[in-house]
Length: 210
Image (cartoon, rainbow, N blue to C red; front, side, top):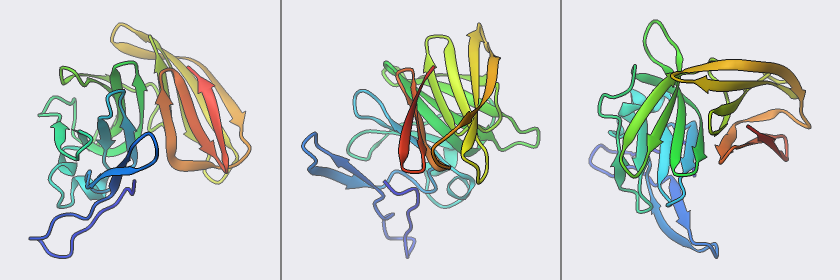
């Protein structure tokens, strides 16, 4: 998957930037899932979920403009926010899955700012959004009411590791620590899978449990 796409003329379709592979590694479909994608995750049924950056949101691709989107495995739009977010997104941060649910983490585009954790239930399309306990995390994983978030240190081999718990409608930080890594965190290469955060540091993938 490439985070960017383009078209040379307005009447032409957007260039493909996503490929779906079979379990054996054979390409099955190729299509476009929007422009400027800093966060992408797939759900247990093969659905694709994307959060966009400002160049995509304010660019010309129609689905990128809403800030968040869901796609099926053939490249058809399956979900849009439809005005149900607490603010308009400006930048996607990271993403995670937990069982049947998908979480997209994004920063607000309003003057007051803010980062939000949005939980989507693909089977119904329902969403719930919570203020993030950490501004603009680059890694996120969740298990029940526990979450782990990370913020990379620019040009350093370390991250801030934050743990949080959901108390009703509020996420509260329970611990913070500095974690030394084998390499610098690779941007847009942190996502959660069923309670485990996979974070790429240099040529190494780290697994951190929520």
